[in-house]
Length: 409
Image 1 (cartoon, helix red, strand yellow):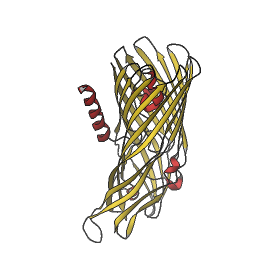
Image 2 (cartoon, rainbow, N blue to C red):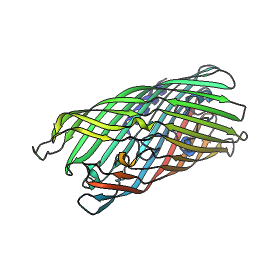
Image 3 (spheres, rainbow, N blue to C red):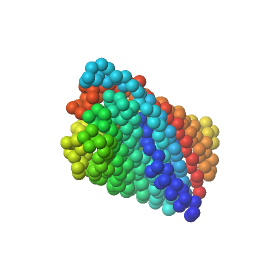
């Protein structure tokens, strides 16, 4: 019992302390919930005896035998360049400040009897971090942006018969948001706050036969009403820092995921997955100040993102009773329009290529993976307060390394 408590406390500390990188799924979604999941491109809804099923498909925790703990850490290192047409004339070229991050995952599943399972997951569903030089022209839009996210998901699952299983769970969602940019081109500002909110999820699996299975997962949107601290450094008018409270909303979108699993035999299987995310909930980023700063009552920006799909295919082949090889590919549609783009999330559609290996015996499983995310550029429209009329990002990519460890009891 002491080990279980220590595991969850350590997992919570890791999830809240470490930021997730901003080059994962489209928008600011995170799908890197385990090394094996990354290895299969995120198409891992039907894994056998994997506690991380809580994240990928809660209805599949009925595939866990007995009791299992799992911890995972995925390292993501984003890279990219930009060019901006300055309103003052000329073109500025630059690149992001490489700011790698971690996507941690922590899972516990217990089989109560032949019909019922419980579990809890602690992982990042949303997160991003981006940074540019503070004296660049794009700093008028954003030079440092970070969204730390953590989801605690207590889950109950039931296996009704050999064909049907289903799950329902709550979500306690944490968000820590920090935005920095230059106002009037030269005055640094910082907005920083955090919030807790509730959501829920539900899932169902249906097995046509021993080789074919489908699954459906719904995750609700989570709306954070955030009270933050705003600081304007060395105001041009007063010569002093300006402090005030700021208020705004951050809506994390709801999503549907559908998956299909086919087993060729006892050693080889393939998964297909499609995830539809309602990014249209991110229609604006509006922050209001209690006390106006330089005549501005707040920061208001229309986004009007589009809903979009993520498609993935993953394969898993057992080389022996102890070793498994996995591979995957995923494609994320871009949800960001030209006039709603910014340097908070300055990237377009993504293609993920990944390969992983797993060692497993009766008591433990170790997974490792390597991946590359090829990221399209994005055209960004400059607005009234930006120092550029238009900007373009290019040569974007991210390197991914993951490791997972599971212990069965």
